[in-house]
Length: 91
Picture 1: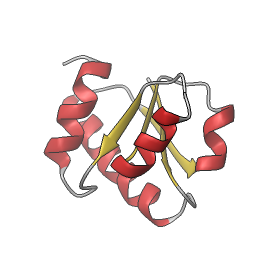
Picture 2 (picture 1 turned 60 degrees about the vertical axis):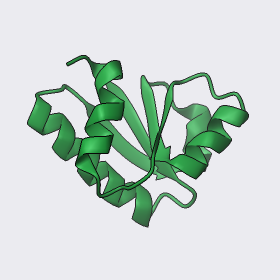
Picture 3 (picture 1 turned 45 degrees about the vertical axis):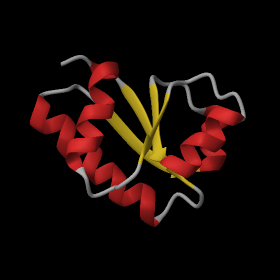
Picture 4 (picture 1 turned 90 degrees about the vertical axis):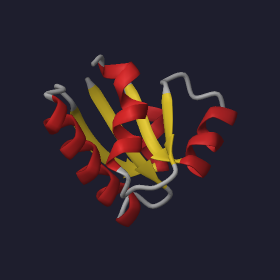
């Protein structure tokens, strides 16, 4: 599964969230190819899932992004990330 983790600038938040997503995927044995970038990369992303903080995720949904988008409230909450990713990667 190809995942894009995004934030407004593609630096701090998406970097930290990417680490968490990779940890959750590894813990669960999920085959996830995870990259991070700014919102500018969303338009050219051809993958399976986009993950961002909730406010940015809602903006993407409102803009009509076709790729499924998950919004995360707390980037440090591995349980939330796992719970929200599970339906997309299988458990």
